[in-house]
Image (tube, rainbow, N blue to C red; front, side):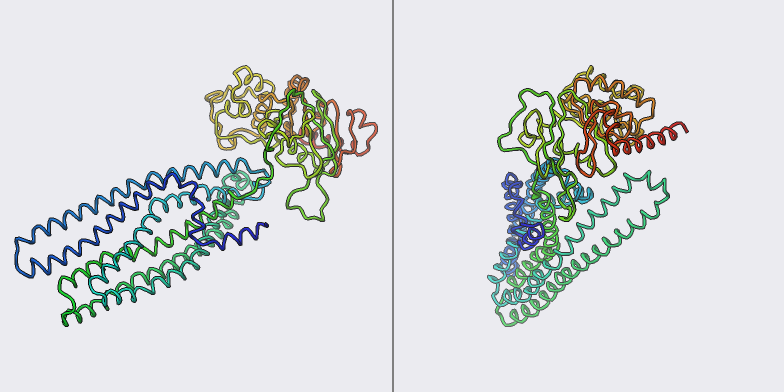
Length: 601
């Protein structure tokens, strides 16, 4: 089923069926929520019983003038009032905690799903949309479970029972009251169709706005450097204005139903009062009956008026549930096999056999980004990937750890197709260091030992030494210094060295390095390369090289051209035999000379 058809089918679900999808998460909380409903219902029935006591009081002791008989009735009304208050407090006690547990389970599953989904999913989805789902949407679901659904069910039942009381007091007045209330239900049905569309648009726009804020915060240095803060503000203000317009549209829809919820009961009261007076004059209803009727109608006023915001809350929740399951229903195309195998004797031999790759959303007329890669890297060998921009170097390295899956051919690790391994095992054998070094808001120690948290201090110190990252010892708290968000408190070269130390500390059989030295100065680069030679002597390595000095680390070089490996050999062999290789190397030398001039300046 296509994504468009799936979305269309979801939109056809009724609100009840859509919200019912959260039942597996709410199952454990249902007993307490049910007890909360029961307590609330008892409180509502107690409130409805009080008018019946008043009816007996007016038609009995007060009409007979027996004051001594009034006090028991007063005491009974007081006791009923205390019982109603106790039931309300009990309802709150029952329902508040279970909602938080449901929210926590849904949030944990959502986060786990995000971690499990492939990189291709995150390439398509703005982070602000995901953030709004995991925070605001789940918070709305929690409030609805703890408050909305309980009061909605109890108030509807209260209205039904209250109408039965009205009919028992006087059937003509009861029928009049019910007929006059009918427009509320008609308008409520129409309100659902209109409000659901607006609510969904509002929540989507909130996600887009969150994305804009996040991008501006992460890119604040760029915006300031280019003086584009005003431009960013203009774009943000435009999105905020769209959201404001949608929120106003929501407010108008809610105001419309509130108009009916306030107007209809008032008109109903007026007509019922006129009819009640007429019936009383004709002797068809007693004074106590008339008092009980309007006291019951007054008790019903809050349940009737609450239907409006409870309905809007329910429709908002339905939208939140739809948005939650849009992510949870995403099919993960990169999964573990049903019966994963293991590499029994890992040596680090990495082989690409007729590997093809194209992005999922690439038009059919476009050629494959990788078009039949054949490459074998022997255990302990260092292979450099060289090619012009867009030749597929970074994409090829991403396939080795299944950040993306091949669309044709296969990749073997020690003779085993990597798709037959569990992803966890695969990524213990292969570690990566990216050109764009990403660090987390954690200590230096936690960042470096991310791939091998059980490593000791010696392994940590060795990795930092190889990456020339000893600067961390001079930080305020040394290895326990907490790095700011994405490591932006460090320089680009410092971030790259820590990312390289992270890959080295994992001690994998295969080390994949995507131009890990691009942000280093010439002297530091030379020191890192010298230290890396010791590591690479015993580790299989695949290195994307953007500098001639990085190429010198390799035993052999693979030349990529238009998605294919067109030549493999030593640096000297390729210089002698490949004109395109000489052109690529000369381009890299020009770039390196430019970077050295910048560093010296």
